[in-house]
Length: 527
Image (tube, rainbow, N blue to C red; front, side, top):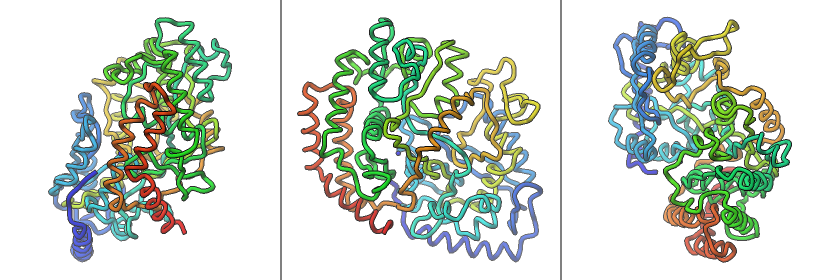
């Protein structure tokens, strides 16, 4: 989850200018915000507007009408600042996101970003973000600076300079898999649920045989789903581990014991053929619709809610932070939703990179110091944190007597009464509340398993230079997007021949050159 046209020298110039302004502030400032994070010597005598750019559709609920004014009242008192939100809507979001960064003219300050799905490193390389010096962070985001360990700051550096603030104090699992119905799995003879792709086939076949009005999985052929299934089979049947930042899902480390040598899964061996054969069998058995590649208008999750589809593919948090209890309490009582995670057969699981969510300061921000102060409060001040993440107490949520678990007020409707700012860049477990849709038992059971097998992300210190292989990567991505949907959903006459053709296309497009270049860059960093 790439292009921005700005001069590399801009960040250096801005950092120098900022250093001069800090020196000036140190001698002339006399105003200090009240409460919250310390503002150092910042002059807050002049009001400023801080614009926060975030991915998400413009809210139709109480986010901007009720909650944002409450936030701004506090920010005004503490920092003489007002927060505005610039929404990058989900339709073609990445193109719009990158365009906003490329054309910034001081109109944005705080930028929610990510190294794995929001092009953080390509944008750093194209000078879209400001250098965050240690002095800047210590002065204007002191609580965050103290909270983030030194080795985590190292993972936010490019060419020795910090550009990102990581969301590193929040436990989350966004590894993908299938949500399936435990009641139907038991009926199918899978007393403990689905724990392998073979089990999943047994489950789908039982639904096909037993519930003629139900599609085992009414799959939607989105590019993200194709990618998840392709990498899901790979991690479930090999030791391969994913590498971020390569613009393609064609490159994996060989194993956790040999992460800096790349797997040759896509161009040799039998496992990709096995995947293609499995897809063909499942397609022929009718586990999804015959016209699956054109099945773009359905909502698989809603069909699971209605009992018309037996599965939904998404990640762990979707399962235990909503869907498990939603299915049980609202849609299909007794369904006992379960989760089969990709990589389970091999115990092959990588912890989420701490820059899966991160905050950056836009390179042309007119008020970077105040922007950092706002971020420091949003991340660490309990009152603002709760407003930003949960809304207004009594209106969006009601706390229990211990002040740790919240429920919704009577008559609450999320679409009209809810609030949220898609704050995926600085959540803080020290301030988190337990929500009404968190299935604690199933979450903790997954955590227990994950904690035993997961390894840290192996590639956090490298920022790839893709310029030498940019043309090849574009061609390889096009080939992947052409061939992989048919492999995933079994829409091929001869899987063996089709995989052979796919592999020849990859080789002709420069796959071996890309392998060599990526391994060379890995070796330079991880000597």
